[in-house]
Each structure stands twice: as C-alpha cells, then as structure tokens.
Image (cartoon, rainbow, N blue to C red; front, side, top):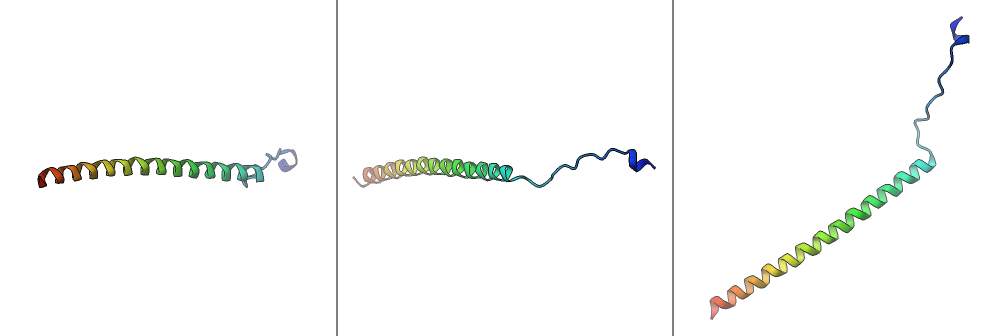
Length: 66
C-alpha cells in the first residue's frame, strides 16, 4: 500500500514557455545582428588593406616604367 503514502514529485515542464521562446528568439536575433556588424567591420578593414596594397603596387609599377 505504498502508493497512497508516496509523494509524487511535481513534473518539470520540459517545453519552453512563450516567454522563454521569445527570449531565445531575441537572443538569436541579437547574436546575428552582432555577427553581421563584425563581418561588415572586417570587410571594411580588408577592403582598405586591399586598396593600400593596390596603391603600393601601382607606385611600384610607375617607378619601374620610368
């Protein structure tokens, strides 16, 4: 007759609530936005470096032609 005196543990709800899902979605959107900003910043730096190298190459070619 143990089942009558056994205390049932409250079941943990494993499915996320609406608020949890909204927070997760918001966090994912923030992460994507941050990653995109980092990619744009890196792209800008790389473009500037490429332009500097091209300018140096052009100067070198001009000096060899003279």
